[in-house]
Image 1: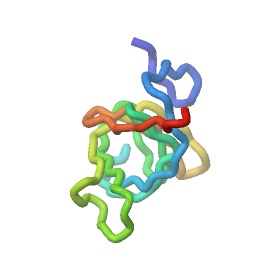
Image 2: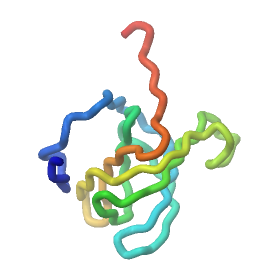
Image 3: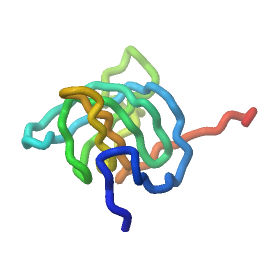
Image 4: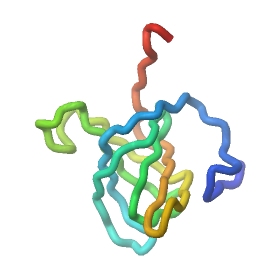
Length: 120
């Protein structure tokens, strides 16, 4: 099994195509200090297999998180029926600035359904 890196160097080949999209995202888990959290952020990109996002929480490789991507409606609270909910393992952590990290996760629970454009 390839060694996991703390940067984009040495990433393994992805199983599905990433789509650059800023989707609202709720992230739940524990940081490296054991502090539980629930933060709202947005994705940089998503695929059927995972996502990446920015966080102010220090996370470690392989730790488990819970993710919620709400169905497109501003009138409904996060966690409503129809939202996409899954678990994920942290696969990449890149320091962006002091106190801010870009995190890449691989879904360990349900996978995200993606659709190709008919013009593709």
